[in-house]
Image 1 (spheres, one colour):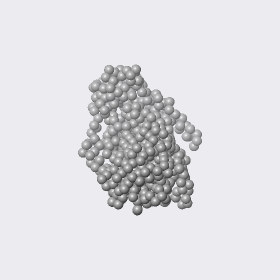
Image 2 (cartoon, rainbow over the protein chains, first blue to last red):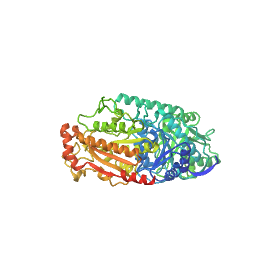
Image 3 (cartoon, rainbow over the protein chains, first blue to last red):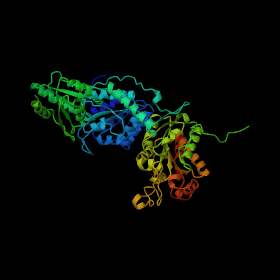
Image 4 (cartoon, each protein chain N blue to C red):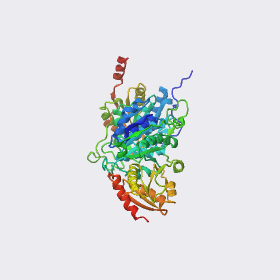
Length: 352
Length: 257
């Protein structure tokens, strides 16, 4: 496959179809409309591909839940306020152990906020969002290539753990054009016993999230918990940039990490020793990896396009091990690398 | 030689119903199971039970089932049917599920002409949660959230689902029945059969509204509940066929072939 130039939203769509996604439902919302439009145009060209423009995000998530139950690879996408509406269905899919990929191209909030890139949905994504004791695997791509790779991986992870997986990007990631090479996805491995396709001559099956007996329900919760522990053990991903000799490390994900990288490049030219730690999975958070880094580096600056949400996870990982500073730009504000470089330089100058 | 004229439907599990005495759900379940047996579609049928008293429907229906969040049955059924076009998909919904919290999903599944069947149980009350006012609660009817009776000025009017849905382009077959009498049960069965047949023939969206007893929350005896449907409820919600595009669609199909 040759290198092609595509917008982030289209990359996600193409990667999903190549990964075998054959059912997409969605409702228009900026800044992710290009993804819905891409699916409308292209998924129907794939054999068995279904596109539905739903009446709401609530309907979309329940449509993909239904299609997922039949054993079809499914995806829906939206942006922040629309993801609020999907939470009912995400909680339900987690309870019913239905695989599926949910894309959140974040915009400014709270409320309707604005349509500028933002990272204010970190808590919603990593803490569950919907009600009940569940977790959602959350991937945070930072390049066009990662959008493609992680979208494909998301389908495999969703199958492997039978749980919804979220791609958490923002308006900047969705809108920008970048070169990408689509990898060949591995063949799907999803047992038929989990699919509802009609009982045939055999026993009928049912899928449910309602467990009226508290002991049954408790056991179901512990079962989900054990699954999440397995995810935490094997599915953590992160990336480090120039941390080898760094005196201070910036912790950032997605678009914020790209801006931080630009800032760090500028600062390195002046001889300041700054590195970048970039979580690629936000849940599970690369806690051990960050703490290992803290064995040698004691100063951290968390940068987010929010008032400080991932900051909590960094504190949980590093509290008592290192000093943590924070810089945030919420509500759709996006600093330039040079603006961020100034902020970093000031904090860097303060450290011993 | 003996002939079987009555037996336990194969698609109905041998479980004791959890429903209250005099409740209409068990009759509706049996009717659907008899139809599934007669049409020979047990092996390809997928049912979507709602939140509400019928949430445990999978304890009774011996077909594949997946429970939907409250009101989302038609969206989930749409997803199942589109992903698996050869299956027979039905959602089973109460009045709160269909006409309040799930009105958007119901309306738009109907409007898209999804080739699914909706079984709509109208008992004019929220049963499982203990008898609160439903969108189909009658004017002056007392419920736990309309203790002085439903007042149009405060609570609006009973939602007439069949009348509204008959105006929707995507709807192929629409009938309101009742299970308050043996004749009503027989009519209901014919309607359910017609609706499933409509789906099997690929003719699009069908819905059967069933006026159904809820003696517990109506605070009536079982017999009085049946009477109340016949004498009061069916005046507000007249039974009958509200839309039938089946003959036209069949004629068109013949013309094309």
